[in-house]
Length: 264
Image (cartoon, rainbow, N blue to C red; front, top):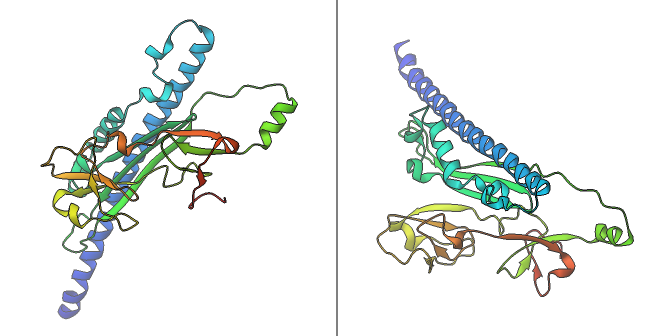
């Protein structure tokens, strides 16, 4: 019995600790998802207020009160809400890599679509038994409360229905049929400066300093994307952002179809 206990008890303890660690990781992820949902719902309501007030009194500049609807919820406010909610469970700082600096936020408000995305790396509570980091993404995706307007059906509107819309960026050379294409929504990763020379993007290319934000040397951490060629000092850098436009396929000009999400 002593021999059996010596063999079984350690295995049982390891399984129990891993189960407890998984529960803590799930609680952290659920907390982040709830924080994004709170701010996302508020942004959807702000968008409605901005839209409605502009209809009631067109001569007033409501943009000073509600700056482009959902954009009034800044990434700083979302980040603050996430950290405030997580601070109810002090253990989260032991699990998320780089603690609050490891919470990478991406906010997209395009064509009345509100998308908040938080990416982070989390490791087990008992890393001595399971030493592996998991990269997790929490996302809120919703439509602003702007409603829609009815128009009389004419020959022009009927032809417009048949016209297909695609998504493009300001400087991109391709158009996309899927708004969720990874080329339009780059995944941002946090990399230590000491490991920067060894990092490669999905195409096997090397990363170079961003001309906008990485001119100052000495940073301990940098931000990179899967398909980018530059590393950045700040997630607020315009080089990490994508301004997305929805246009008709006939207006794409010389742009080519995206090899990942477009049929051609």
